Length: 249
Length: 310
Image 1 (cartoon, each protein chain N blue to C red):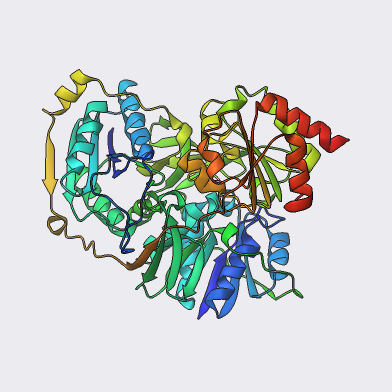
Image 2: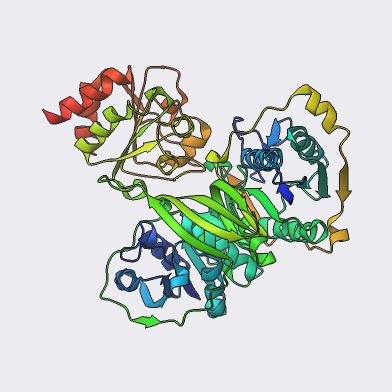
């Protein structure tokens, strides 16, 4: 079975994000970039399924600026067999992402698409659901377990109150939650090997997809700052403050 | 303007966040219709009818709407969508699952997790774990939106609005609900609690969470956990507060043994009063705390519980 996995290049989650003074966005110059953590989990899942003999080929797909080639190389160092980069400006909105993924699905015919549940930059949490909708396929979002069983998959989803178990028909789209797996570290020999793996560059026009944005970002601002707090000496003082000053207990 | 809200419920009760979503809808303006769809959910429909501002409730029951049923629910919403200018859902795991599917089927770009309504087409939403608030203007003919519940006050009560039946759509047969394992707790739900006591990696073990639970019970509070605590296996994922877990804004949030990673702060920094207890005087959590105590949690927490008992 062939699997398609999407990977997004994002600001490193441990970097403090700074809003540009002109309100046009966040500062991206000289900022450390990395693979979105949920996409790492998606690649890891595909690689584990390949190691288990269920998956025969893993295709990694990224959409964005030329530097996304690095993200794809990381995916290939983790175990993806080849990469596709659809060249586009930095911020492609989720509906456009889903249309590009759909066009790639038409060329590649995967049985399973694994995507991160959310990118930690725009925090949209949409693309996987949208791909599944456009394909008319089943979706299983926020999964913590997946087992392929012939033409079906058994999945466990993380929902607000606990867990939900579903059986979905394949082909399908699944999106990863944190506890699906712990991604491996890439090793130097695998980074070297990944450099030799095929990486195809595609223009969105060649796919016949319109990636024009549907919403305009008018401004980006810092959130309101919290007023600085008070250090209390002990539990007694803390309780006194909570009772008499904050009046919350 | 006409707004449709896709309600989340357990068959009987509406999930916390529904009344807040109604408030967001009221800010947009126009009549508010609520869709209550599920296997069996007439009670939830009655409850929705009593939330102030709701003009009409559509009730749709069928076995193939059991569980999340995103594929079947989205297909149902599609049959009525064009009557509305806006389709809203709370940004819960349910809303996040179904709303983007609806949006894609309508060929519109969803606006996720709005925290403010500026005009009927312009909204504020947090990005980068809440570190950059983006004001966005949609050019789509119909707006599909998820709502960050904590950013809106819950709507009050009213005399019941009419409940109408909506005929069920077909079962697409794409996915089948097997079971739900919901964690049972006597404590309030995280997203609805007035007080939350959360533990982080500093708790050291699942066993040690008992001292937090004792404090939570004394305060009538919910228990939460940081991603580090969840990753370490101290608590299941549904306890996780943060950018990719639950977003909470209680009146009082007590963070115990939590260092304050960016993604955790994203989930709780809008709480009214934040208390941080950590033995590390340099912990970043102190930067958002209203009151902070530098002390070993294994000493401070039992002492706090004791003081509250006396």
